[in-house]
Structure formats: C-alpha cells, structure tokens
Amino acid sequence: MGIVERRERLRIQVRSDIVKTAKDIAREDGWTAVSIRKIADVIEYSPPILYEYFESKDKLLEAIRMEGFDYLQTEFVKIKGHFSNPQKQLVEVAQTIWHFAVENPEVFQVMFNLEGAYCDSKKAYGNAMSIKDNPVWEMIAGLRPKSGDLVTKTYYEWWCLTFGFISITMTTQPRYAFPQAEPVYMEGIRRFIRSIM
Image 1: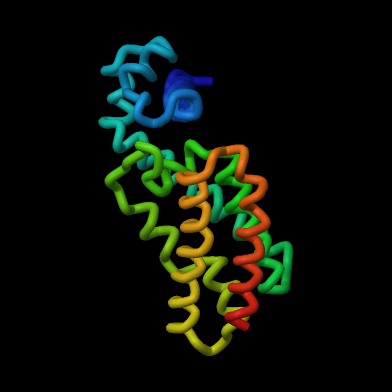
Image 2: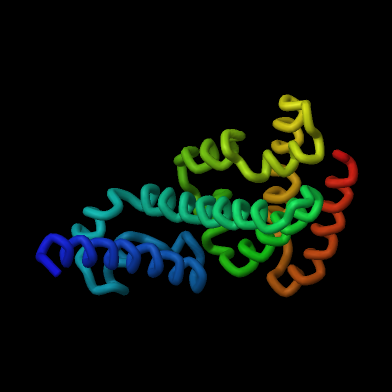
C-alpha cells in the first residue's frame, strides 16, 4: 500500500472515529454535551485537526443527518425489492423507521432537530423528500396509480405520520414506554394505508 492510499485510509478512519465518538457522547450525555473539543479529548486529537474534517459542529451534525437518511433510503430500496405488495412494503418501511429510531435515537434526534441536536442544514430533507427515484413514493403510487399529485400529497402525509409520531413519542415519553407506543404507531400506519387504497 502506497503513502497516498495509507493517508486516505487514515483520513476515512479519523472521520469515522469523530462521527462515532459524537454519537457515543450524545447517547450518554445528550447532544448539548457534544462539542468539537470534547470529541478531540476522547479520541486524543487536537481540536484543529478535527476542524480539518468538520469545520463546525453543525457540519458534523449535517453529516450524521445525511448518514441517517441514507441508511433508511437503502433499507427502503431493499424492502421494495423484497416485497411486491405495496401495503406490505409500507408496513415494513414503517417498522424499519421505528426500529431505526429506537436503536439509534441519537441519529434520529439529529435527523429531526430533537433533544438539543439542532442542525441548520436542510439538504438531507430535500434529498429524502424528493419524489425522483423515491421507493416510498413509488410504493404509495402502487396503491394510487395514475394520480401523481395525489401520490405526492399522500407521501407528505406519510412523512408527517411516521416521522412525526416517532418524534413526538421520543420527546414526550420515557424510553421504557416505547414498547407500548409501537402497537399504537403500527395501528395508525395500517389505518393510513387502508385509507389510501
């Protein structure tokens, strides 16, 4: 391996360490406890080195937000390829979003500016909400063919229902109450799917 490849590998590793450490601190102490200086202390680098990777905490949060939406998008594509029935696809998508939020609360918080994880960038929302090559939009279109505007409106409602329900649950309910909230969420999802058929 040459010097250039080694440097690039080190750069990727350090960037990954920064992101992982930020999420670890947030999981333990909340996003208000996360700072470039604290991350630098944990991974034993000087703050100026971290600023070479992320020029601010906002840029770091933007990267984490993008990571969350990219992960979900990949899962949605897999679901669309695995199941042919749009109803089943949407139920699977809803469960995937729920489990992702429960297992990665610190990432979900950044995705939706919850619990002190405020990120100013709206880029990830634009990408995730775009209907071009969007598997969830296509799933909804499978239930409402020949009605593009109505599909787009329904897709927006889907966003409000899924991400809104989980965001409200995460900010208003103690963590131990999440298992009781999941069936309520899934019943709402099933009612919504029935309403658009």
